[in-house]
Structure formats: C-alpha cells, structure tokens
Length: 157
Image (tube, rainbow, N blue to C red; front, side, top):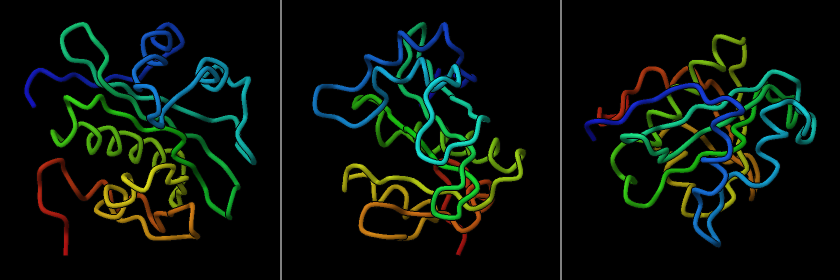
C-alpha cells in the first residue's frame, strides 16, 4: 500500500498507539508506555526492547514491539503486533515483522517466541516461519529467515 511510512517509535508516539486496537482486539495496552520506557517487564524479559510503527499520512495505523528474553529458552519475544483493520492484508504487518526481525538479528537474537493471543494470528505467524511451541505459543527457530522474505513476495521454499 503506497504512502505508508515506517519508523521506530518512542515514548512520545505511545499515546497515539495505545488506542489503535478496537475493543476486544488483542494489541498493546495501558502498560505500553511503561514497557517502552523499560519500567514494565514481561516474564523473563531483558532490558533491550524496541517498537516500530506504521504511519499513513499523519496517522499511526499499526505497530510491532519486541524485547530480548530468556522465556522458553528463546533469545527474544514479539510482544505486540497490531494493524488497523482497514490496512490488513496490505503487507503492513509483514513489514513491521521484518523491521522487528532485523532488530532481533542485530541484537544477536535468533530464536524468537510469540504468545499467539488470537487464533486468527496463527496463520500469519506460520506464513512467516513460526512453528508451534505449545498450545498458546509459537516460535521462530531462526527469525533471520523472515529477512529473506519481503512483503508481497512469495515465501522461500
């Protein structure tokens, strides 16, 4: 989708991101400012974390956040990924995941876990190389494989 910009989010961006998910949808929550500031730590999280956002015009339309961790013997965890309904299936989530994967690899994190949250998300993660870890979690054995994919491009065989 043309006209979408991606940038690393910081604390001043958080108020506009917290309210993106519709009621009942998974996504960031009131802990988002504390998470990004390093004041809220998910289980076994390490201090290093990042958030990327997608912007259309002046309006944020999605985000992805992750941190380094030791949970499930992983190196990193995808904390949140969310794209507004009008922008889904336009590769916005794929690009956000790609940016997050690049950050993980640059920080020496290869094995990345994600709490699936909604079963609607499982096919997205699977298309991008994640496999089941347990009934609630998936894992990328090597998140670097995501960097071999580009939004809209066929997955490597």
